[in-house]
Length: 122
Picture 1 (cartoon, rainbow, N blue to C red):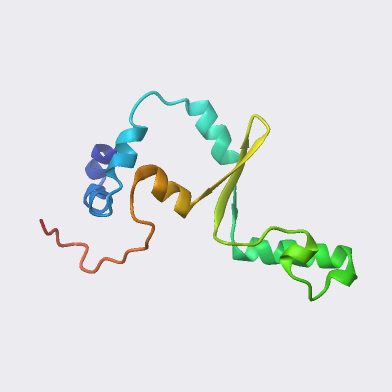
Picture 2 (cartoon, rainbow, N blue to C red):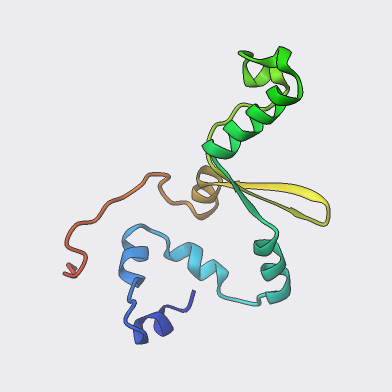
């Protein structure tokens, strides 16, 4: 994340990232980057949320009507716990979640809402 470039383009968000304790994560990202790998990863990733989980259940039930009214486990699906970003690296399936990311960067796994964001407070 190039905060200086964003700031020059009237999008100064460094304060908000710092306030939410995200700076260690962004500092970790500063270093050698494999742009083709990152580009390929995001092009092939998908967001798996509640709606995708419901569609998955419906598809399974449409394939086998006997599954109607059964739990996800009895249908043969894993329990939906939280939204995931899913992708594969070298054939290995990977899922990122808010919980995993917050543990990796040692930050809170909670949402935040800020009021009067046009005013900076130190």
